[in-house]
Image (cartoon, rainbow, N blue to C red; front, side):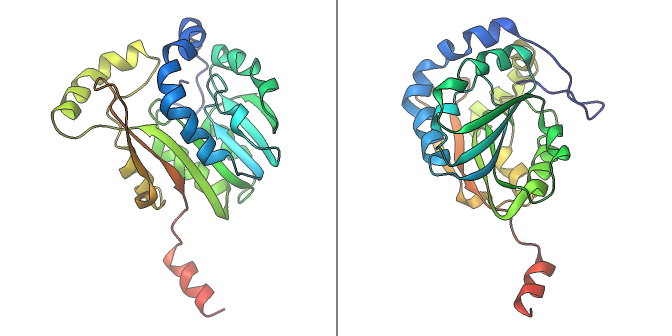
Length: 227
């Protein structure tokens, strides 16, 4: 799940080895921690859903029948893995090659939920991606998040030092993203996130997960009060 940065367009990069091994490498963490959170967050969704960075399609089986999902994935090798999982779900899922810039093609206020699961670590401009998501969300829509974040203390310092090399080895993944701050700066109520600790102490220990709403803009709030 790798995005281009300089032009604002998605750079199509394919990582066949990582795509082929991804599910096996993450099987234990997926079974014990990630899958329960995926089901908890998307299991009751309905309406129009956009998943940004669908990866190998690990969430497809979690969507309910009432959901119509547009799943975006910029890596052709990951996309090929995700295509194999389309039959595992009961929701209507449309899988498309593309990244967060595809959100610009969607009408404003057209999505009931936008899903970012383990993808903001590798998007070159996560703040811009979240602004795009906020634009397409309906007023009561939800931003659904499972992301690993920079840890506090010494581990965070080590993550800062490792990230340049780690990012090259893992197709753009940053160990040290301060995603909670980025969510708040993009206008989302990040206080509703839950902290999740992985059983492995290194190199990634801390996740955040939850369903977020966009904070209401002050002028809109005042106008509604007097409407």
